[in-house]
Length: 350
Image 1 (cartoon, rainbow, N blue to C red):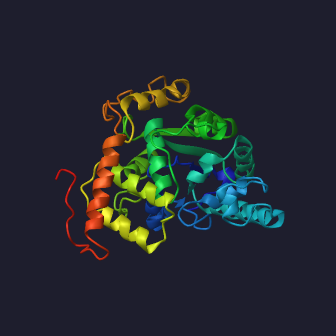
Image 2: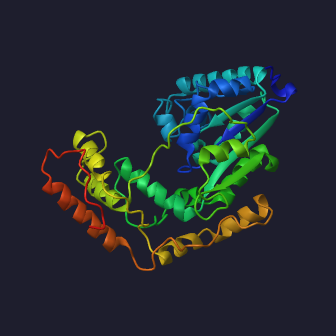
Image 3: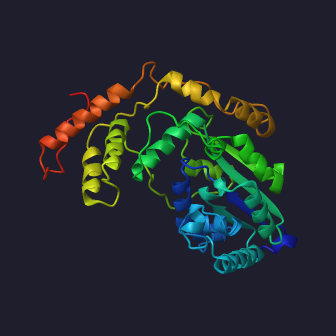
């Protein structure tokens, strides 16, 4: 299907995340169904990264940036390689725009782009595309913070209990959705911005992120190959144990770490949040002004998220979580070094 470039009205849809909103599953689905998308005139570029199109973020960032998208691809501090990459990405996306009605890009790394990098991205893409759509999935900030904490622990980092302190401006800005969308709107226009509220506290609580993505973009996904749910997080006591393992340098990639994770998965899940209701309310209050601005500018005045915090316990839950973590460690230790991994472990109620 011919696209026709800027004159023909090719659309560039850029899904910028945010993190922990089902982005990996969305990207896996897009990759698995790229042939079906192509038959509908939608290009899913494979040259921008393995599922996650972080190489577009690298093209937009300045050469001196130490962002993971740059450092991980050996572009940081190397002007020649970075310039060549930027030119290659621009040319290949332009070629796709000539032959497709839409080019679809997805990378949560794009969420991290500072305003000047977003402006660079616009300058790179605007000659090839007539229209842009910037899609961002937004979680209520307390939910995002706890999911990010779990991800840090899973990837081998130590994480403090409860919510982050957000001492740096960069970290605070990560949760400031109004500022995030304002930066992208300044480059691509208000009409290009498509915020989608997801997860607990939103009107789409319980809706599968992949289904929600296709629905938001009005893509007929009937007959698309399904993908498994990815990046499922361990429960609260298991995260406590893995956090201790990180402190002891028993990190992902170590066979003993893999064995520990497999054995922890045998316990009945205990999903109580690792924070109290008061802590959640205090954390959310820091973003009240941002969420109000988000609602006013992007949601026709409707509240972005509900203030329902009933899922959090009134009392501090960490002592109970620590107690269950200790119980699990004792049970694991009692099995010795070669447990029967097919054995069902005692659940948390015994």
